[in-house]
Image 1 (cartoon, one colour):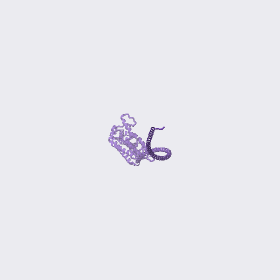
Image 2 (tube, one colour; image 1 turned 90 degrees about the vertical axis):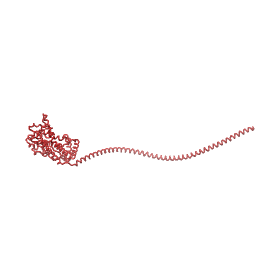
Image 3 (cartoon, one colour; image 1 turned 60 degrees about the vertical axis):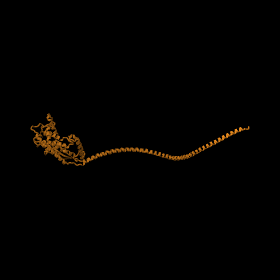
Image 4 (cartoon, helix red, strand yellow; image 1 turned 45 degrees about the vertical axis):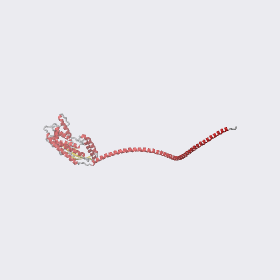
Length: 445
């Protein structure tokens, strides 16, 4: 069928519209494509730029990686070296531990040895301290001993002998004066009762004092001399009274000179026994030093000196009571002290001085006063008879009127062996020597 014009126009319009639409679409598509292309190009450029950046960054990372790998390689090498070192160190540590164990064992031994050494050092230090102290003590002792070993006696035996003679002279003069004073007071117009010895019972209370006086006088003068005092007529001849006074003063003077501290002999017995043992075995320098130091410290312990004159006056009172003095003992003592206190004080001080001289000033020997006890046998080699020759060599003595002096020196190297030199003989009274005094003395015999 042949198309018509209207249908042709419609178709053309249709196709025109379609073409226009296609062209429009194409234009739009071209525009869109161009826009898209531009966008793509921009994106591409951006991507390329990013890619370049990434490439640069990748290159940098590669370089960093290479550096890291190189560093890692070096570290691996270092780590390998460290492993080797570690293994070596571990071996060294193992060896060191072994050595340490050995050293610890050695150290333990050293510590033990050190402890032993420390203990030994402490012991030696203590011993050294003790030795030093002992050395100081011994040095002090040596210095003290040196003083005594090198010191010389301050007095000679002759000096002391003269002192004893002077003391004897004082005793004689004092006794003679006392006898002259009291002899005339002993009036014996009527005979006395039989001599009551110290062992005789006393019935009358008034005679108890007489018995005590007899007892104490016998302790000093002995029974024979005391009996003669009782029966002798002292008013006619006071010589026996004088002898009794002399003998009593000699007894107490010898006790003072020989005493350690002027106490009773019994209370000094321990000191004397210790000294006797010491002097028998030790040299004079040692025993003399002990004696001097002991006397020094004994006097420090007992600084107050007893009333020594009271012993003398008590003996004088007893002698006068035995001799027939009728006054009370207090009255007799008062008379004695009023007339003879100064003389007795001087006599006592001289005896004390002799005590210091023979006790403190001699180390080379011993000087001892010699007093002969009543009724011992007379020995002409060591005693002098006051009244001349001896009628019988075996006759006992009555009493001692003058002190003697002996120098005693221990024989060196000999225990208990002494050399005695009698510098001054003591003077004694024999009963036979009184026979010439008179008939009263003969009756007393």
